[in-house]
Image (tube, rainbow, N blue to C red):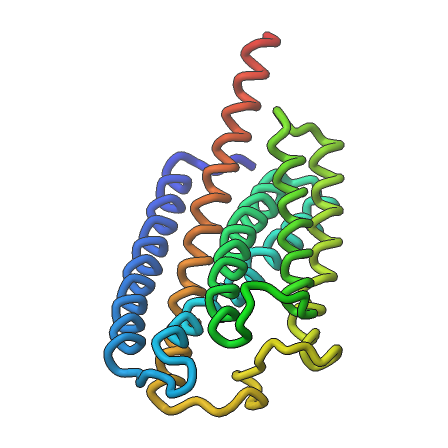
Length: 238
């Protein structure tokens, strides 16, 4: 049964309200977080001001997990149901996850230069993070090659599920293979002062809201693009 115009308008109005609320909360979180990071949280004694990268690097990695995880979920459901809205979620998650992966791979070397004296080392966590970025970059490259047909969409969905396997490897690589990457959050890399803890915690919340907003907006745009392409195809073949 098709939804009535009134129900459709109500649904759109409700979505816009939720979007505005999440946007407001996320902006407020970022404002408070930046204040805590640069005003309240102390400068780390050994790393100095460079340690402030920590508050952006680690939450970006978490947001990367959210994006790639959403892409894998959307891709898995799409392979089962062939519903375009889940394919749109897969595309949105892959793009947002790749964006945050790039941020991780840019901020990481800045931190590594101060901590290890080198820009890059083939640490297990760095290597597995780079691998995840390459897998989802291949996903996006495949989807960007003209108008992706059903075969391209299914193959790309398979790539997203393959990339999902790499995410636990990123998370547990330090404990499993004993790389040089610090594990501050688990306590093995040294404790956090209370001001640092609150700055990091709010940063996680802010980046979670940002990732959700970006995925939501990109998935909506992808659905509209697919619908426009479908209508154009129908008009051309009338």
